[in-house]
Length: 408
Image 1: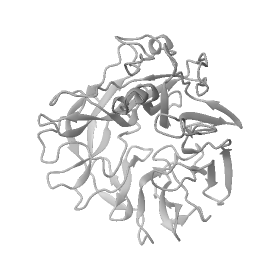
Image 2: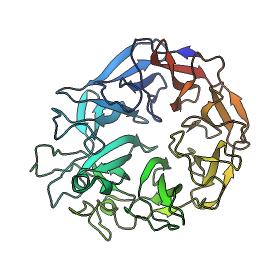
Image 3: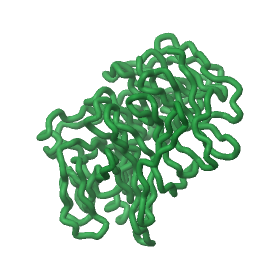
């Protein structure tokens, strides 16, 4: 176990893609832990020397955070809040965007147009938790809509979207808060404010994860026959070519004043889990976790309670079928998790230690012992070479970054 950061401030890792491709640097932001979004810099630390570099510094009152790293190039992608925030337009779920820092150059990932009739390829609100696909060609994100939020916040349903390199997207600029983007952005999930109980309809899509480069899995909130929320696992097959991403389906890609932006033609979400009948139905929201596919794109992992009520790891094929319980621990997994780059194991927090389980047998091995404080449940991230794992832990009153060797 090795402490990597020491400055008297918080250091926040994102839940995936925090390492540079050479496994030497970890990217982080400096916002306080919790929901506060007040950090002004995106930084990185060298895990060998402890050297810290500032990648980006926000100006004009903006705040930044939740940085992820491109799998092969020196590119950093993060949430950017509004410049010159005021009482009418300040940081919120529907007031933020993705920004790319690449070799000192800064660009907006997504465009935003909030003036009807809107612009295809642009969003109408805030994108967040941006994650590159394994080949680095596409970016997934979760989304909240400014236009519908202004009509009624209850209509601003969280969705999942994808940005693809089919831009740039130029917007008319009829509102001072609109901006252009370098990527073409669309939603790929479909939600409704009032799902039919017992159906596959959802009113929220979130915590997505790439399944290879052409599919995206996510959690969707269904309603049981009795009207209770049950989070289930869904998947979408994504368009292949540029023209397919720009072809509208049964509703406009850019949405209307009354409706959310719609997925491209042929994109339909498919439900993978059916857990309404279980003793503890649904995927868990505590701990917060993101569904994750193995590198081979043959199994998707998620957290769900077993029949004794203990949070365990489960696996399912992208084609569906019966989920397989992987772990059989005596206590809850208490964190988000990630696959080892080999696909042979998964890492998480168990019994206040960093643990790994075999992806075939579920057998658990602990990588750490004797933590001063419990590891944070926000992130357990393997280096691309698989030799190290990083997490956060409160040390002397501040959230610091730690690493350990995996032995592989």
